[in-house]
Image (tube, rainbow, N blue to C red):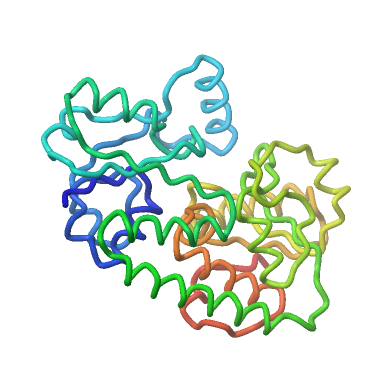
Length: 295
C-alpha cells in the first residue's frame, strides 16, 4: 500500500503502527518521527514565515474571511506518488488541507486513491482513530496493542492524582489574542488532576479577552500555542509574564506540537507532563523535556 498522510498526527500514528515504510507523502509539518522528513512533501503553508502571534492570527482571520485556503496541495507531487490511500481531515481549516480540497484534486488528477478522513474531537476519538488507521492499513493487531498501552498510561495518571487537590488550570491554545482550549485539551487537564478554568471538551477552541481570562480565576497558567514547539512556547509565555496580564500566577510553557495540538499517541505524553506540572507526579521520565516553568 502507498499512503499519503496530510496530517502530522496521522503520520505519527502510521509510523507507530509499523507501516511507516508505506507512507510515501506527507506535509511540511510532519516532523515526527525523524524518518517522516524523508518523504515527499505534498502540502505546504500559504502563510509567510516569521510572523508574530498577533500577525498569524490576523493573517488566518483575513484568509478565512476571504475564503482563501491556508494550505497548498502540490497536485504534481501527489499525482507522482500513485497513492492507494490518502489520509486527511475535516476538523480545522487552520490545521491542514480540507478534505474537499483533496477530493477535488484527486478527481482532477483522475486518481482512484481511497480517502480516509480522521476527525477526532475527544481523547476517546483519538484512540479510536488509531484503531481506524490500523484497520485501513492491515495493522489491526498493532493498533489494538498501541491503544491498550495508551489506555494503561492514562489510567495510571488518573490513579496517581485521584486524591490530590485539583487546581484551576488556564491552558491557552493561543496568546495574542488569547484562545480558550477545545477538543481533547480540557479532557487532558481533567485526567491530569486539574480543573479547566476555560475550555469545553469536544468543542472548538475560541477567542476570549483578558477580562474573561482573569474572571476564570486560574491557579496556574499553561501556555500551549498551537503550532509551536517548546522553545516557541517559552517565548510567548515570556511575553505574557512581562505583560503582567496574570500577575502572581505560575506560568508554564509546553511543547504544543509534540503533545497537545496534534491528536495522536503523544497526547498521553502531554497528560503525563501536565500531571507533573500540577502535582509533581513522576509518571514518565520521557516527558521531562516537554514543559518549562518561567521564573
